[in-house]
Length: 205
Image (cartoon, rainbow, N blue to C red; front, side, top):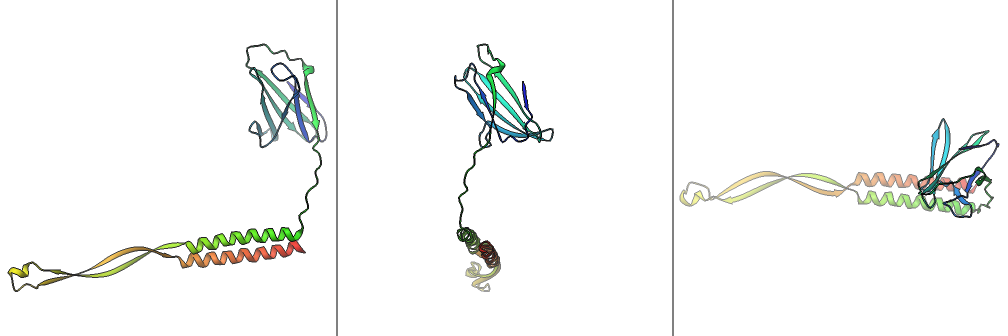
């Protein structure tokens, strides 16, 4: 079934359904973006808010809400997967429009806003500096090695040298502090702090 209301402004729609399978008091089905049963999608270039509620005895109510500039419409779908027949007179379906109430906004002084901003950015800058200070790089070194060995042939052949000398180049991989990363991180942190101080001064103007 489809229910249409032509109203210029409707802030919140609440569907209340009292019928067999739900409690005797009106069952409130409220769309809430944080609710897993609430969805939002686009249909024919219009944002549709859809919500679903399960009652007892296999009764499921799904409501799809469209709020256009001049028409507010609700598509209400009721599914009965229970064993009993569902007697649903139209007069048992109610649509109520509720406007949200007002709430005073807590005022945060400008100096506190500026301090929180600067503290947050200083913390971010410190994290960048710490990461730069801990950065390492892999260094490859070529090390010449001279190895002196006893020559077994010299025991039986006096003309042979008593020792042999071998020279080779060993390749070593080791880690070392990354000075470039540290310098870059330090510059980024300084820029963050400078911008934070400037933003803080603008807030206090």
